[in-house]
Length: 353
Image (cartoon, rainbow, N blue to C red; front, side, top):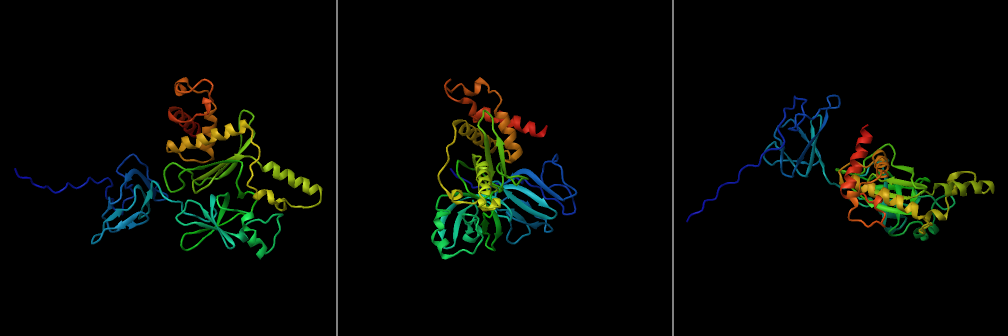
């Protein structure tokens, strides 16, 4: 008995070649609108690595694409969706590392302590740098950093500490330089840390008007702060701004300081958590479940969606969602499975409406 080996069939093309003189979208779906004013469009089909994007030589290749050797064809190098900006073709990856940009608010973790600086993990390809000169000193003193400050560098931040900072600059190799010269930034405590996808693609944190806000939670739990890092790191904690303001007002009465920035004290660099009531912990857990439900359903994470999902989760639940729970357990905070899907759907409808 003889066997014959047949050549493999060519894979079907998902992306059709488009004439460069046409303003139509490259996507094969005809129902997708094209932004004629901005000449920018995005497809919904997923392109896999090695797939042909176009063979027309008048298209320019961008990120996530490569030229085929010996031809004018443009091939995809990552899995994602096709993005067209004028004549530039690029692939927006479904999953990618965070790319720092100046002005971004990020949440990071201290990885190592070096001379005059810290190395911070911000979910970027390279570790970010936090110079000693880019933080607030205890007491709000504005002076040049000395050797004494270098010896006490671990009293400010040490390995494993979480902080919120702003990207001050980006080096040529892509590494970011951070700063915490504001009362909004600094060490994080009294909360829970969540890691989701960032602006690389997919459902996750997106750049929005506000990345930090305070929620007046239900059930008498008080205020809770939410910090959405653009890099996909999220921090949810008990609101402590009032304590800082109170200490500032007391200091003003004592004529010790006259500006709020001077209220920076050693307590801001403390790693000891304050007492948190069970009601506040329950609402922090509820907000955590809301964000995880948004990510699991591929919905963007920003202030509007988080608030809409939180309010939707306060509605009475269906008994069929918690049949596997005991009656004594707090099942209304559970936002997984079908209940999480329905809560997110209700939040999307509320935002659209």
